[in-house]
Image (cartoon, rainbow, N blue to C red):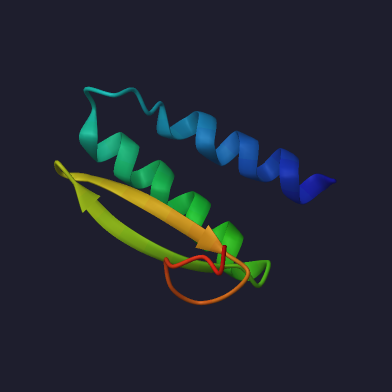
Length: 65
């Protein structure tokens, strides 16, 4: 459970709000690092300067269904 509190703390320190693109991207990087450490495949895509994370149990962005 401690790792989830640490993640929450790290995300809160990013202070990401829509208009603060660097903070949004920092939060995306924190989340990506956490997910990849948990064995989740992540793909990042730029969307208007914001990094959007696609996370899946399999590599890539295309779902089987």
